[in-house]
Amino acid sequence: MPASLSHFFAYIARLRWIRRWGLMRNAIEENVATHSWEVATIAHALALISNRHFEGQVDADRVAAAALYHDATEVITGDMPTPVKYHSSVMREAFGEIEHKAEDELLDLLPASLKDDFATYVKESQWPEEVKTLVKAADRLSAWLKCQAEINAGNKEFEPAALQIRQRLEVENLPEVRYFLEVFAPSYSQPLDHLLGD
Image 1 (cartoon, rainbow, N blue to C red):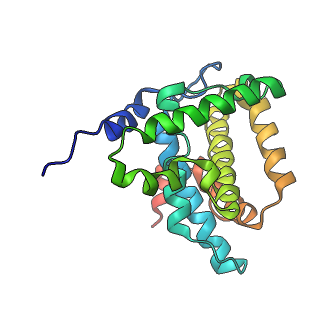
Image 2: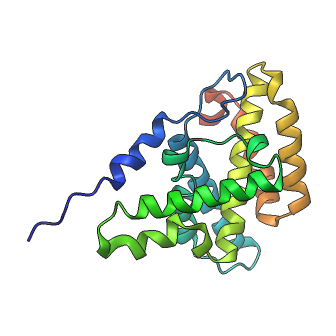
């Protein structure tokens, strides 16, 4: 018996059309799909760094998969700029409700047999605390790297955001993030010829 048609992945694929940083002038355009991939790779790295260097016992694959879907609801809600989302507790609470409804709407697009499997990645409320911590850290690292790329392209509009995000990362003080910033982040500003080496 053939399965019924699902629009879930057709919706997810549209993340590529949703621009990020909509309130700011961008020298380098970024969309939600590209951002999600970058967050997934960074989150996966943070989990492995935790396990290898800081006695973590994190499921790196679970972290990576959760990160892939961390902004999936934006295909319904759009990218809400951080200053708007966190403008007040009322705004944050209202947007949280919208995000929860969007999670449910997305999951309703799946065949019933797959809903529970995907809910563990789409619904942040189902993530274990260590997954949530690393995905949020990777999201911030990705945002900081974007700010640095904009600044390096001569766009000073991103300087305040870069400073604010970096301060937040320092306050959170995760050893995995410090490791990533020391070992991997400096290469992001290097020209291609320097990355390839001899």
